[in-house]
Length: 163
Image (cartoon, rainbow, N blue to C red; front, side):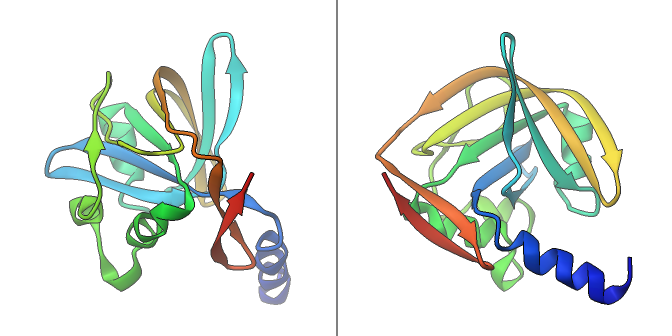
């Protein structure tokens, strides 16, 4: 692809509405996370999810090493969490977790205590394609706090979605 066609691809992808989720990995001081809009269900029986994670992120090696990850689907009240985990202001690693309440359930991955939906996952497989890895996780525990709203990403920005 040429530079212009890559730019066109990125512009087109910004027109696809996606749910904003934070992927977390690691434990204690050795943890990080990132925002993704590419989380989907793979299977209900057994429960499995898929997400796409950039291999150049600080979170990718933690997922590989700790063999777990958390998926935290965000609501509009979590915009500040999305901004921190997007790296706004140069915030990195464990500092991204400040300003929100986190819990753990089974694997040790951090879950946002009031996430719209949170999935505690053990890593099954990482499949490398292009700049990203498709991570497949077995859902070990689920927690919900459905308030009828979601945070979405569209046209390059975070936006609230009401039911």
